Length: 607
Image 1: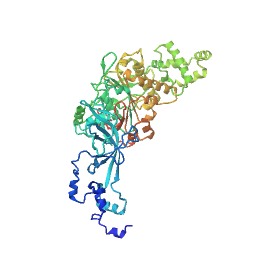
Image 2: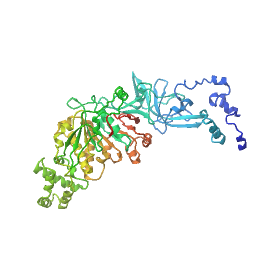
Image 3: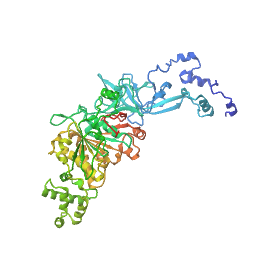
Image 4: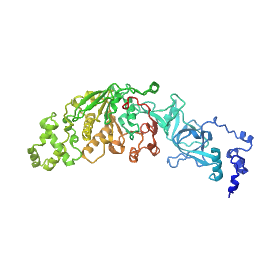
């Protein structure tokens, strides 16, 4: 036992006796000790001074070096030299060369300090020495990185390609940080061209390369040469309040509105997409205007990286006329066009007036009543005329006696279809007469509902217009060729309010319609772009069709679980700063972390 009286006289900076065997290491190998006692032995060890070493460390076989089909059996560990330890992070990408020129691309999944020698550093002497020096002698410890193999990189002629990890590297292979953009993009399967989302990052810091620009752009595939454009495989942007999801969504939508963005259609033409964005917070019409805070240097960087920026002139706010609500917007300069939802749209979408309270039997009765009404009144029949039609006691008695609609069912229907007078047939031009303005190749149409106080009315308007687009896209005999023949990106903010999974007849019909639209999106050139802070509330049949999930900061555990991203990235989500995001797009790349652009590419905010 150490005498504490002796400890008080101990000089932590002085010389102490040491075991010669410990100083020299086993067999007198100078590489196993804190440092050779003999200066000449140091020179003989051929240790290159820090700063001129190649790479950041070497692979170690001390605990085995294993590449296996079972990830649990794989063991890859690297010793990181003292001078490089502060530069590595969990999630960093590394490369190790095979002797024949192929390369193992991997990432760090864990970092740890381990004892270099069999000694106990948890003692009063060691602690007081460190406290007085104010620093740690890292050469007393091994700094080990556990690695996850991602892919093997190889040359096919002049092209760099990747394949699954099927080789184990040799012990003491030098590992280096991946700093070549080509290596990193190939290793992670990131395409060179497509729709820009952000820059590759690790721990919130952009991955840097030796090239210019030094960042690595992340893009979504957007042509038919490498499969279907991912815009028609659907996108979901999830993030909590203040996470920057609207900022990010605007930046992505701006890329779909770029002049060069166009897709081939069935008749052989190449057509620019129309973007129709439903906007409950009245923020997207600002995309008409330039961002006054966008600096010239930022604009030059956008041009250098092929990122579309600036206000989009062809932006129109399609404002629903609902009751006495008025839309007064002084925060954007987009053209404003009023419209109303004609009651004739209910003919093909009975659920628009079903409400949440009808059961299946009552819903069938409502379909019967609407069918009879439109057969007698034609498509010009109004909602007010329908209510008058239901007030006919003779109709109620006739249907009951014929066993078509029971009188109790009739009464329930009559009660529940009331309350839509503010939605249908208002004093504005019907949306069905303005389709050519609603859907414009290369145009952005925003449907704001912020001014509508009645949530049921707002939901009805959004679903009516969205269903018009979906029905025409899916129809084999469309009424409006403009919709059928134009690629459409259908954006829906607060999507959980409209596409929720519920037991009501209306919810089931809505979910069924949009899940079918999602399945047919690739063929019909229809892409869903859903934005939400509650992804767990989006109906599962729709969610399963989403190929690209962009996740910003989420604090709710259920929401994080719902987005279904890999566990190594899932844990980062609650700690991400504004603009940081995780992208999970299996048909595009491995799951990655990104940093979005700090500046919105169009106007954003009320200032």
